Image 1: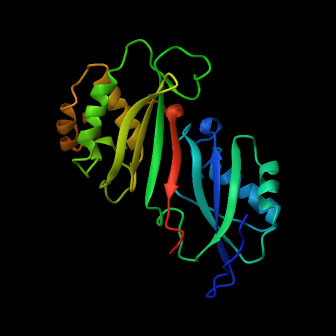
Image 2: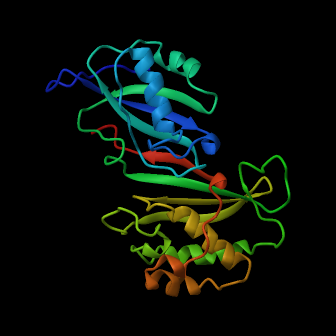
Amino acid sequence: MRIENLDKNTNKSRYFIAFSYNGASFFGFQIQPNEISVQETMEKAMSTLLREEIKIVGAGRTDTGVHAKKIYAHFEIEKPLPTDLVKRLNSFLPPSIAVKEIFSVPSDMHARFSALYRTYEYYISPVKDPFTENSAWQYWRKPLDVAAMNEACKILFQYRDFTSFAKLHADTKTNICEIKKAYWEEQNGVLKFTISADRFLRNMVRAIVGTMVEVGSGKIQPKDLHNIIEKKHRNAAGTSAPAHGLYLVDVGYNFEH
């Protein structure tokens, strides 16, 4: 754990915390009334160990049931951190959350707004498999044409307005995103979709996956994505894929600035 760089303009230092979680038992990352969230669980554990109220700001808001293999949050505190805080947090937190590292950052580094990109992976099991029941979408009744799905992926790069894949009535100010990569591949008998962008809309990845499966199953053609995207309405796209197959796997920052 690296602890350094006290900001000169405030008595508080800002820290990034890198962690992962299994989202099966949480109603998403963000705190919400009467439900268990990752954010609330983390804040309670940190506040208890550090003996003061700690608020964290996450890199994104994953939906209920979505997992994170690598995510960051930031928090501020005035007093020095215990050098064994990572170990103590991991002992205090439930098995579904694992802290990897805590390190200091400049005061203007923001877990959400300083992120340059986010990368998600989505897993589909093409066979009935009880061991991936809670970690991948069990889609085995009809084979999927991966080549057609990758052809459809290429169309995503031609657009920036992804309103058709956004959750209706969301509070976002813009639906403009820049997709940097999107492709399907087979990995150890499981289909994996990788997508990276500067930002994502709520439900966007799951809506894209659901639409891609319609392409792979032959319900629609890859070229139909042009019409779906250009309609700029959620009803034009496919049904959202199940949450438990989705993982946030990386968030990129310029830590050298």
